[in-house]
Length: 341
Image 1: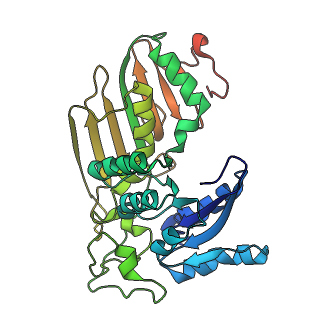
Image 2: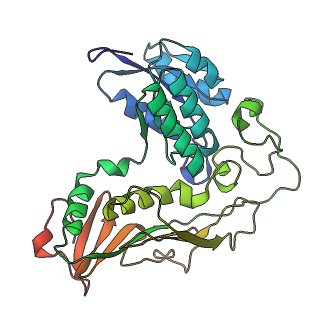
Image 3: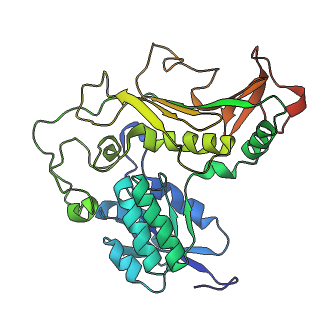
């Protein structure tokens, strides 16, 4: 392992498509400049099962005269003893296995959200980090918000009464991904065996391989596990809960799209924490037309509402406001920097 004054040699595993529908995707692509900003960190390797992604991301390094190794198979990254840490920005079904293998290989890990595809996998990741003495960080970066930390400390102090519930919400418009009648040919730049990895290797019954894996149960967790995971995380933080709830129930479905996707586009989950429960609601289907087509709850369409006996907080990691029960903010006792009224 590197010493405190040594350069940390980093590999980014999973670069992603930057041409996904809606302009999203390419999380590894987005993280490369963030890693380059970290003092003492140096990206020395890139890994992706799609050669086109590798070529795209390696070119800027070449243009700057920087050496960077490229790999299709993450095993080759883990075998490289000169690599100290890995950034894992793979599809959800790969998070656990890649993290466990990296820990076994003596590498520290930054893994994208959601931490794992399911609860059991997450437990194995924690066990591996402890067994092999590795640092493992998950990309639920809203925990770094000073504003939220200060806000939640005030709310839990009881200054505006006891917390009654947390309502996490993601109202994000999406379109259906269409249908196909026969398997879609795979790009010749992709190693599909490596892409599937621990998931079943089945014909591609959708138009796009990349990004749309979010909406299939074998590889993704739908919007609840995509953006919902962020607001669930900060809501649990607000409630002071760091364990699974004793009971949970959810209901939802895939409505209106008439496409080949499987995961819910309308989903509500209740986590029965005591004394204050957590409700998470995600929507991808608009309820009307116009700028407020997705609807709002207490003027929020993304983030959380923490309801207390004497008022409530509405906002997200970028800002928010405290209101009295009539919806008038900010409460004078809780004027915090960065709040918007």
